[in-house]
Length: 101
Image 1: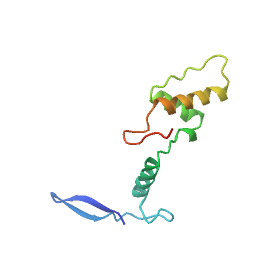
Image 2: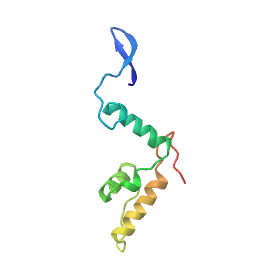
Image 3: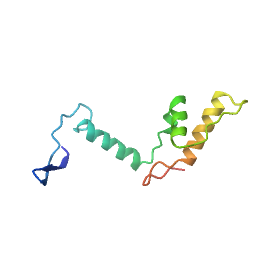
Image 4: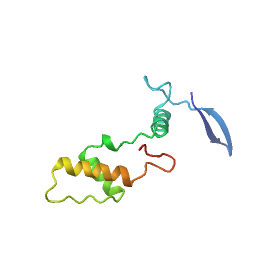
């Protein structure tokens, strides 16, 4: 199990997580399994943007202030591909997670 630092009676101690594990989660509770997956994703510089559906892509562009105006002649395919390209080039993954070029 995962050892956590816990605050107990004005002191900190190291103790096992103790939360229930789920089958298929490498013996980890849900919280620690998510942390584990995020560390694998970040360590491999995996970009989630190509997995976004159209709505998620537009929302991500707005969240990160990527220009998402659509031209009149632009079809859906061209618009979403352009947004994906802009999002991936203009928005970093994180301070310590470089994008793979």
